[in-house]
Image 1: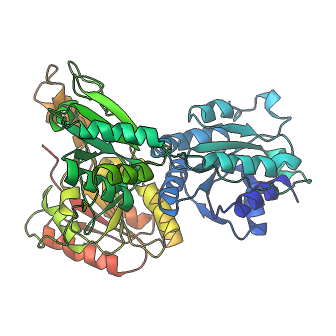
Image 2 (image 1 turned 90 degrees about the vertical axis):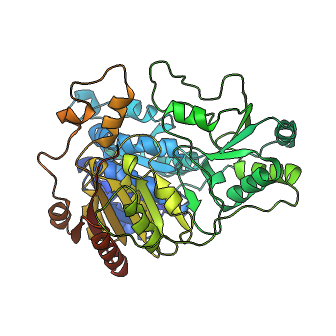
Image 3 (image 1 turned 30 degrees about the vertical axis):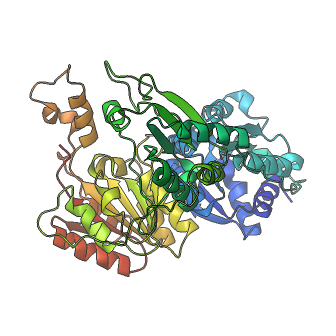
Length: 519
């Protein structure tokens, strides 16, 4: 057995089932070893950002890591953007990066680079395997690091001569570390804060945004009057009929300060204390209201769900959660608008859907519209780096082939990783992609307008660097070139007909939905 096979067998023994990759010469023995490890499915992408974003989406739905295989430092660098998003989502990822043979790097050949430094940027552990005999042990340790609470990117650098050398030994799986519990003392202290009767906000995130956490938070709100908010960007939210729904914190500082107006106590569970996404003149970075106190019920990585349930048992005995009733909007008519496109989604969303939300400025009405739709999961881009949506959809669809995936994607975001459509077609994934085409970087126009002290001549719409209409992207022809059937909708009626047809037919589909930009 060579080192490459030892690595892959170790991962398979540890429960890894999928390897997303865009390999090169230094990874060929790892690709070849896949033939000897049929438990590990290889999924090819044309761009490394699709590889890493797909691993993120897979982890969020499967609840366990996929592996990625990238080519040397430049390939790793191409994938870093969505690894950044993965890090912010606390997704477990086993990141394998091929390298030149151990004896070759001293010659500084053109593709030589500091791979370990790139891995360190992700703030996770980095290992470099030095011989075939250690490949399995290093793989087991890397997998254990990836799944350590709350989940992280663990990088394993695999020199080519370690891959091809004989003497590989399969590593023994390392028992996963349990999720740390919140102490009874901390829960009691937070309960006392709530019982104090001051205006209190509870911000929940991470696993707390799934059924058990939502129910517990809603019980607390019903019994005590605590105002509950969802963190701005969440890795996975269970949403829809039969579940409580809470407002997301706003994007702009003044929005959050308005939401938290009058609050004297801010409690966080599975989320960080609210901070501004960007800094703006004369606006605070920390968004806890002046004079208010912040309390951590559960750090990110602790068992926030159990802490919320225990807290609810202390302060909300007998209280029932307030859940959304089943309801769907009527199908709208007329030209597509920022409101009626979400009504089409809400009216037709199938049971058990996985919704990818990278709508940016075009999707502010989505959560409210779908609150009464059949229960579904929502995955968001969490790190602010555009281009995660289409790869997230690939990973989610690989993780749950029996569930429909609906990728709602801003036009500008899609162009970073549009080659994900090729992987959708190659794997025949059940993904319906909706490109929200407003011919603009509308979020940048909003941001520029937000800097009111620096207006541009003619207003933000006049800046040509914010426009995507000249030339306009033909997403239908682009999708078809990647093997994905596509249509174009300009009215609600067209959109509803095309969306229904796409959901009814297996495999990937794309709809170019032409909408106006947000004001």
